[in-house]
Image (cartoon, rainbow, N blue to C red):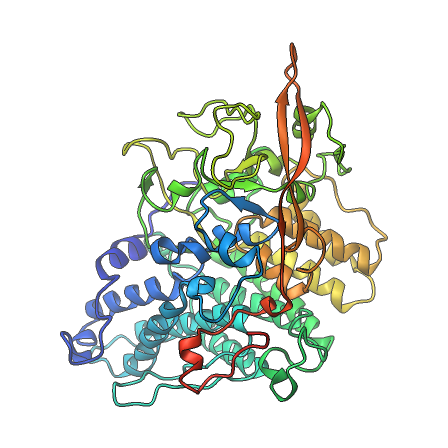
Amino acid sequence: MKKKIYIFIISLILISCEFLDKPPGVDVTEDTVFSSKEQVEYFVAGTYYYGLLSDVYGWWDGRETSDIQNAAYCDEAEISAPWFAAHRIWNNAGMSASDRSSDTTFDTYWIGLRRANILIEKIEDAPFDDSEYKKQVMAEAKFIRAYIHFTIFKRYGGAPLIKERFLPSDDSRVSRSTVEETVNFILKDCEDALVLPSVYPTSMRGRITKSAVLALKSRTLLYAASKTFNTDNPYIDYGEYNELICYNNKDKERWKLAADAAKEVLNECPHGGFKLITDLGPDANYQYVWEMADNEEIILAEKSKPERYQGHFPWGYFFPGDGLFVTWNFMRFYETKFGTEPSWNIEGGENLMDIYENMDPRFKQTFAYHGQPWNVDYPKLDLTMTGANRPIGKGCHSAYVHKTVPYSVADGTSSNGLPNAIIFRVGEFYLNYAEALNEYYSSPPEDAYEAIDAIRIRSGMPPTPRGLSQEQFREKVRRERAVELSYEGHRLYDIRRWEIAEEEGVMRGDMYGIKQFKISDSNEIRYEPYVFEKRSFKVAMYRHPFPQNEINKGYLIQNPGY
């Protein structure tokens, strides 16, 4: 598996990330943009930049609400830096419509949507002959428009549907559509985008493929089928506005649609060269997926940045001392490598290293714990209470989240890492398929077991026991999603779509770390669970609030509770 270079994304986006982000007639006219295929390519690349930038790393102004940092909004993690939105908003039920920190990428949506709509409306009339290229650009723009609307939908529910570009003289105040209308609009754009190829030449692999389109369709239908949207009993009764936050009816057939869509992804991926990474062994497969850019499991990634060294964003907030720390609440999702429960004890114990040694192999490939290396500068972490690498700031005592930070990233400009900002990867859709099948049928069919086992077995974990009830299998799937998709931006939104945030230790209640102490004349470590924070959650936070300044304009209905 050789590393490839995304020539299209890296070279063009770096040139064009600010290119033409202006209304027609300011510096560059639309006639210039669409005057040649080369000019269109620059504009397409800039549209990728704005269209796919919203979630993964967030980069500079979006770093507080990136997929990685949102791990600290729930039981996945605690973040050391005290100024992050996790501390100000999410962990103390402080979300409000007047604080934009709950979604710092909000303004980016509309830039991406405007650019996508310009392409949709203008590409067919571009004065050059290449009908296949024009069809491709149209489909790419439809996908980006759908992806941005999904990003809004998963946060807010029913969205303002931006179906056209707006000129300065136009009234651009678009009211919210219902959840059903929003989902249908996303799905229609996905259907239109299915003309995209299954595979591109190696130099263009960063572009959107048919697998990516089906992946967006699958994720959209999974969310639409989930409890928080697929219900006639919304988290807050909003009366005549219920359909802005849910379907306001419950239909089991939505789970069938979600299952079929996930299966479509799995059927299409081999045609695009996408597959589970299984050939490096249980102790390496999983880490390779998140550490090695351009691997065969990644269907689509946000590729707007080249290699970065330690002092550059996004790496700086992850290193020992600062950083993201796993909670003990989340550690307990991991089974042993034998498929049994680890011997954790709320009273503590003197066998921490033994517990670590026998964990699910993905544990060691996700976290940097006591005695393990971070990189060449930190070859052996000391996370005991007096250790040199213990957390500072608001970090909890536990282990560092290493996932997302390549081990090559170190001090100095010569040690770089390429951000591997995964949007869709194959592993997710095995889990989507297992979950949807289980929810549709009264008990899990064999296909559901086989889907979840494909994920477990590639990491050396034993198959799932058969004969489980629907509820037992549901908990297995949720636990497997927590482990497999950790720190990829899924957990926060899974919690909200399942409506389990109010359960003790998820987004409210006691959050635990583990204090660690050396034992004389032993390589073992004594651990003591302790409550580092008591978090709170208000029911309104199952949806983001629209910014108050937009509500004040009188064209949007705010979500309930704000």
